Amino acid sequence: MATAPVSSLTGVTVEFLEFPAIVTPPASSGKSYFLGGAGVRGLTINGQFIKFTGIGVYLEDKAFPSLASKWNGKTQDELFNSIDFFRDIIKGPYEKLIRGSKILPLEGAEYVRKVSENCVSHMKAVGTYGEAEAEAVEKFIQIFKPHNFPIGSSVFYLQSPSGTLTISFSDDGTLPESVAGAIENKALSETVLETMIGEHAVSPALKQNLASRLAPLF
Ligand code: HCC
Image 1: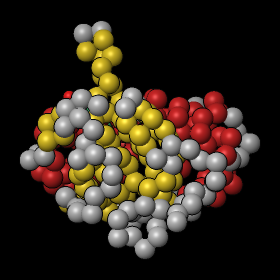
Image 2: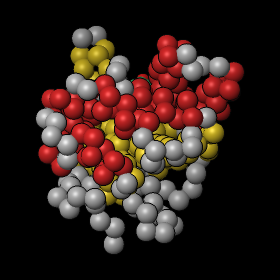
Image 3: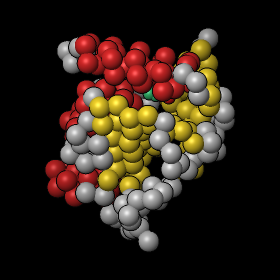
């Protein structure tokens, strides 16, 4: 039975989506990831905030001591306002597993258009967008295109420290056994998480949840 690096770790509910405290991939030999935090990603359309997805960020267990030793003693607000804290999570040498679950139905092409636009503009802004990244983004788009996301369905992004981004799709919130595609590109892989919790993140709620859960545990 997998245990969290901190036994008091709880799950998070975003609308009707439940993000358990621990996930264990099928067919993994006892490996598990703990929930750093989860939050809603919405868009303001005609002045109204529409909630589209819930995003959960899971971290490999060894992320905990590494983050705790640097960030212990900081308050929730200090963590939330620290670009370096989120940068550490994005760049840390451990695996991250991100679950993006749908609150409203979305076509894969529509979802990936938004995500890839954000990723490309971020990589251009920081100067990491080159030919290899353009190819990686094209591959990324093609993986999502034929897919549709009904309410409650999920995309999982597994990011390895070496820069492999593995994508899988699930009809619910559980991690599937099969993989939809894998892309070897460190800049793109990190940028997917960067656009969610970095400086210009799409989900401030997710950042707030990460800071509020982790500060007292550190
Ligand atoms: C990102 C990561 C995730 C999302 C994003 C950018 C996301 C997308 C939701 O936008 C969405 C909502 C409405 C649409 C299309 C996509 O969760 O029409 O970097």
